[in-house]
Image 1 (cartoon, rainbow, N blue to C red):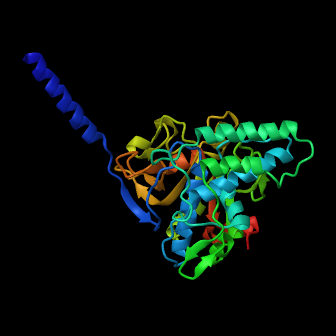
Image 2 (cartoon, helix red, strand yellow; image 1 turned 180 degrees about the vertical axis):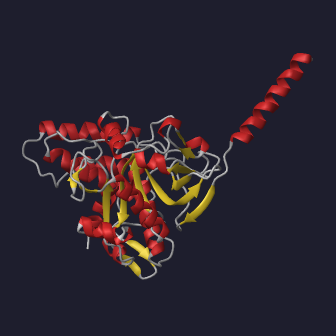
Image 3 (cartoon, helix red, strand yellow; image 1 turned 90 degrees about the vertical axis):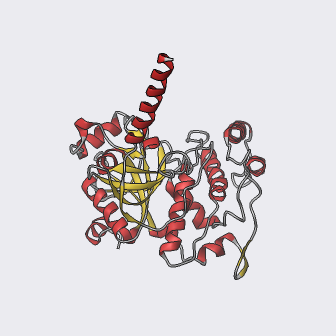
Length: 358
């Protein structure tokens, strides 16, 4: 009986401790966006993040809330990645990962569709892409090794795998204005892919000049603008405070990235000490890696008043006690950001002039 009573006390103490451990955050500024959803068992955070970013852009422009299809961008993203892989004769990255520009590249050429029009195939209500990725990689390697005379623009056998696992692409979309093509659908919202730029902060390239960011998931070898880290943070605060959101790409492998607790921070000895030199060091020694994309939708503070970026993740609303959101401290963002995508109008004028983004 005494042992049983002790166990009850231990359980109660554990519950109380768990309740006390949940930190309270204060939202300072939140830009309107659509709710958290889950990418399931896929490596498509790049699409879920950037699709959410575009949905917020549609709202910011004054249009009705529009739920876009993440899987539409994934379908064409894989197709574009396959072509690039063949152009480079198999010497290019081919995997699930990607970058924000992979979505805007699709937007530019193939348009977009609603989630209702193209949900994509699910298994037991969840996206599962393990078999898809294996089949795609096997197929593209076979094409690369065995076909001598073929057109990269004719990848029917590759597309048949996409159709089986993701679904057949719709030709037109039903809207209030009748049926339109995916490209015409983009024009209804006045979305211009060229309005969106990617920005990073690394000193092995000159500041204020674009360069090809050397991370594996930049398989398209896209250009990123380069600014000092203080200006990167200035851009991010300015964006949120003027009603824009941010597609964020960064490292989430640290023990101090605790999605379950809704928080990402740095170790105590690093707090308040994040410099350009430390950013560069962690990039070069690979302790900052290109892991995950998320959607920054506001600013917040921790219970002790530390400034944070309020962030929408794509792991589902039940993935933590904060509805799937987390709070990344400014220190964490300073150190662990690989790059951001942002509307060029969200950049302060003085920095835009340095970047020649007029």
